[in-house]
Amino acid sequence: MSGVSHATATILGALATAYLAACSALEWQRPNTDAAIASQDLQQCELQAKAYGRRLVSSGMSSKATVSVSPRGEVGVAISPPAVAAADVSAEYDFLRSCMWNKGYEQRAIPWAKAGDAD
Image (cartoon, rainbow, N blue to C red; front, side):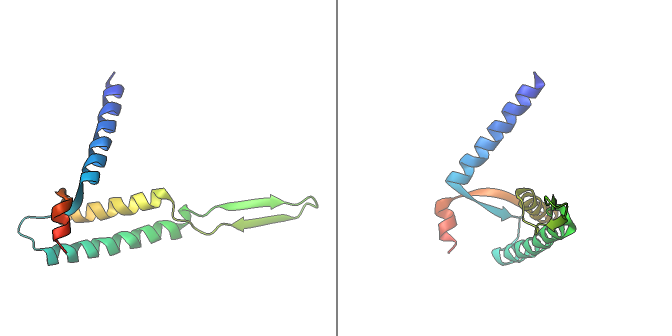
């Protein structure tokens, strides 16, 4: 029974997040931090997250070797180029989020009307 309620909570959480994303923008906020500092911190975390994502790809996690044998018995090995998989993008975002949290930021929803005023 607890598995059902956990699954239900997960689904409701995902739906609430989707609803908030549709009705608002997300913004990193930290008390007593102006927009320029927040932007600089975000840019720094984004660069670190991208570097982390590149290390995942270059470590071979996304590469696959294919071995083929021809009718004559000739063996060939082909290694596919690394591709950025969804898991890599997810890991990159998790790294970014962790980086910002470690700097004391929280991600909060702001109404679209306010988000448009920032321009």
